[in-house]
Image 1 (cartoon, rainbow, N blue to C red):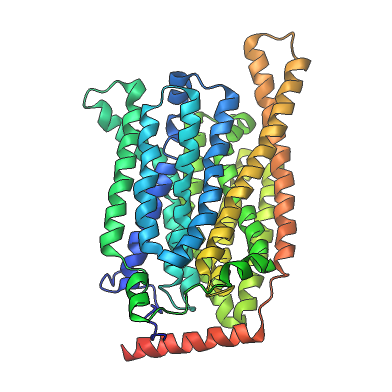
Image 2: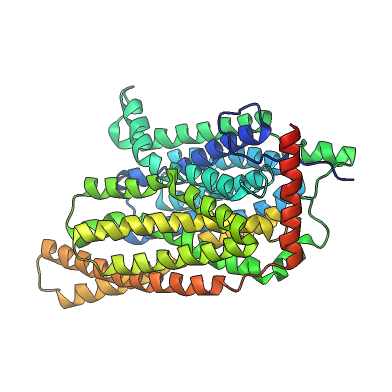
Length: 470
């Protein structure tokens, strides 16, 4: 037996009495905290390298491991959301995921550091729960905007930690802790905050507008989001899921890799200071305040104009723009032109992420969690592949520079290696941009049946009628 849905047809952020809106805020904040903790160590990497004696190879490996752990966690968590509901999944993820964050503050060897980075990556699965929870709280006319906004504001944690973690460290130092080990205390504090957020999630959210999964199952009122026995198998067989898997790798995965390599690239290519490069990358991340929301908004708008096909067409268009912008940026040698195309790339890549999850909720409504998990994992697979590609090109270029300039002094040698690495990353960005553009064309293969289009129109009619009666 099914019950009338109570999904929100608007994103009225001040209506905290509404369960969908309250859930939107809590899940966005939880995702922000997870992202903050996930990349919380990044601002302290110079201190970590000095404290633990990390080699350049180990530093690269830590970046790769941080996104590798997330792949497996995202694949698993989507299926768990379908079965147990987002409330319990987020609670356990926050509490258990906080443990390696806290333990990072106690590591003594490079191996321990790498292991913690791997397991900290598991909290990146929070993205899947966030998208799942907003997908089942909001009606078709606004779900793309809600998904994109919650994800974008959560992603801000990856940029906010560049300001927040040093501030936490400064506060710790003011209590008499030595500056060189303040990073350890800062990670412990970030982990404790994540753990406390798990408690908040348990007590102040519920799985659906109608109630929690356990309660609804007991009363025989489980809504249509329930996964059927064939659900996960049908998801794996659906070619559209795997196209979106690649699409999210070509958007979020590339953003993550570019974000992680841009500091050094800007310094080596344009000769700017580390602090200026850091501020530019921070600005790049802060565009999540509005850019990802725009992707979801236009996905919804195209959906109203041209149905589900309209959502796919917008995703194709914005993904193509992303690829072209990255390709052009990779060829610029002027800081002024470089910043123009970096801004345009930042805007389009984040809009493409929002547009992707304006399509995801309509692929198979009986397995939203599983699909979100697979597509979300695609983002991290994309980040892993892109990072490995850039690492390989950089290593080859640096080795060649070392062999060619072996007669130079130490400082000149370092400069030659940095220039070679910058050139390798530049050509790497060019190739990646071309891959993104090709992926945009593949996206056109995503099709929806006439029955799918009709079902969405009927669902929206029901939700609007409920909202009007309310």
